[in-house]
Length: 131
Image 1 (cartoon, rainbow, N blue to C red):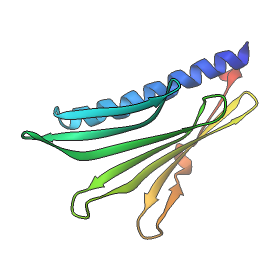
Image 2: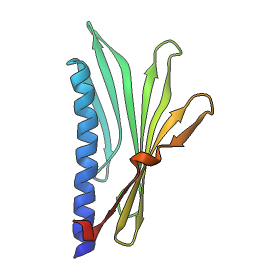
Image 3: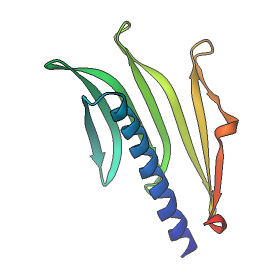
């Protein structure tokens, strides 16, 4: 029962996080359009387009990965670079499940090193006893 409660709370956390990201993007410009791809009840990716007059241009992209239990294990955010005409890494969030504990790690893309760098101050560990 506690595992189900932890899973429900974590799922709610993920949904809220995705919505906060989407809302913050919407707050940036009221002309954003969202295209979401889902499969088997989970969101695989979401592309955000910015309305520019009568045309759309790439803005942000979110990619998601799940484990066999349909728990999110990775969320990646990319930003569009119009000068290079390509998607660029921005943020990576990983979720690790150990028993009744979920650890969330945040990584920011480092252009010089060409890799994601852990932001340890943003690491969160949630235990079902904390609920």
